[in-house]
Image (cartoon, rainbow, N blue to C red; front, top):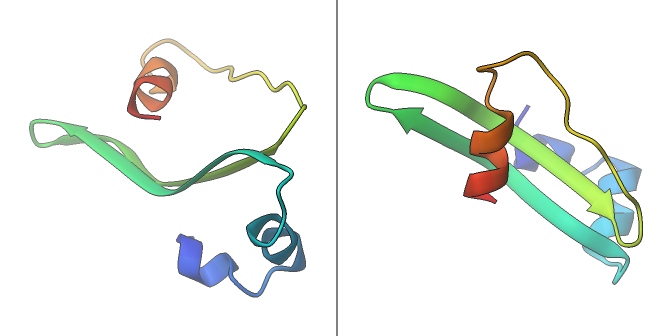
Length: 68
């Protein structure tokens, strides 16, 4: 689901008009050559919160953080 499809979500609306957003990315994608490793990533983390990014090796965790 892309960013524009979330615009009517009340949580997203609150973040868009708030100064409490720490990190927000929308519709992030990245490819190594013809191999897409990230596609349509939407993420919002409120200011002051700590989150962890976990997953199996090779699933794009480091790539997502480097793109951000």
